[in-house]
Image 1 (tube, rainbow, N blue to C red):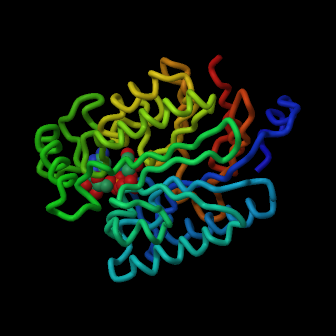
Image 2 (image 1 turned 90 degrees about the vertical axis):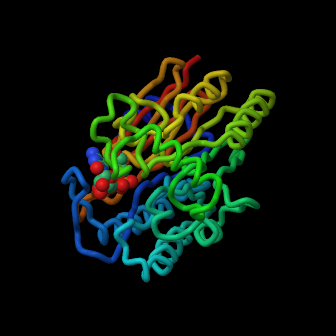
Length: 320
Ligand SMILES: Nc1ccn([C@@H]2O[C@H](COP(=O)(O)O)[C@@H](O)[C@H]2O)c(=O)n1
Ligand SMILES: O=P(O)(O)OC[C@H](O)CO
């Protein structure tokens, strides 16, 4: 990690704070495989990527926390090993000398139901939702969204959120395999079972958090496993109601960047309101010996992502 040395020295000042980022570890003790589209997936090696990430962040001695952008264990993990696999990955994260904030992803939910998963990830919630926020430093706020709030995976089968998601998918996706985008046009290709939506209550919560951030003059970084901007991701990976979430975000000037996982190739875009979107390259897709993790240096006018290896370094200058 150091490929943005020029960017850092051009900046010429110290960051206000820094934090580590990694996404889509999707560990499983199974042989290498491929995605539906034929992209190689290295289920065991991804754990080595995580180990190198933790070691690097600890050696750098400057990160005040780490964010895991979700999907810590793969859906192909044998189900009798799910609990141990999640524990193994969480235990590795705990070797970081500082707080670790987890986001939930579809693969986490293929392995464990919310009531088991959330306590392991230390996500405190009275109603099994996985959205929360925190202020890591004066003038900044991190907002974590739960993209599987309305979802056909992770909730009990008779839960209203499951039923709402199934009804939605029935209306929006005529295929018998609800993970298949066949025949869906353009942005409608996001209406797949491996995605989900932010529900009404969470949307109201987001609106309130952003209002408060405006009052406190805080700059906000929104984090969600699912990408929120069509420019940053393939259409098949977007949050079902990314447009509604962006409408809320765009009502305020405080959101400077939205960070995500899920779309394994990674991407960067700037939306119509000048908000940066960055989806992270997956640890799972790193061929042996290669890496995809990084850290973000936060300044008052920009974020600088310093990526290791396959994670591209990115400068994100805030819109005025
Ligand atoms: N273009 C696609 C992509 C995926 N699917 C279905 O989703 C499942 C999960 O996909 P992965 O990328 O994680 O392998 C896959 O098994 C397919 O059922 C699809 O139909 N079309
Ligand atoms: O979450 P996965 O690993 O099934 O992959 C999702 C795809 O990357 C979305 O295009």
